[in-house]
Image (cartoon, rainbow, N blue to C red; front, side):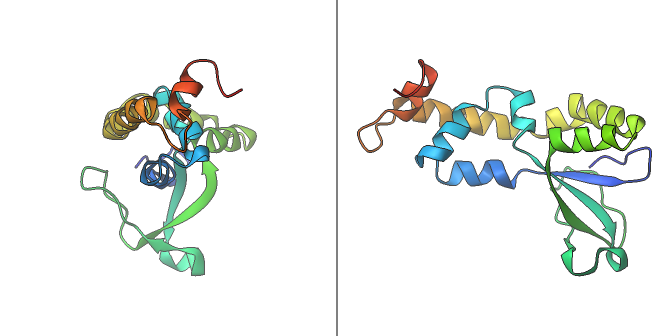
Length: 151
């Protein structure tokens, strides 16, 4: 959970990727999973949440549920979804002129977060292998996607 130079606390939400892994044979999930080829593409599937003081977050605040090996959340802060993935949040920071925040975010993505979410990339690769061998509804979705797409 990075603390950006502007003072904004953010965290990355793996829920969108975990949702794909819960139903990997659904065609839209199969396509999305097979497109997660590396850490860069996985970032596009991670959501971004900000951590705000509970009194500022209002009704949209959720309890700050962070993994055990995440950096600690500030006291009395709650999570507020941004509605953006990592790439969208990077673009938002740059559009707002928060270049130092964008660079700090990139540094975290290239370092600690890449290591932290290694388990998720490993799980995606395992599911991709299963999908390459799966025959769902008579169509080998993963195989077709990996070898030229659907026709």
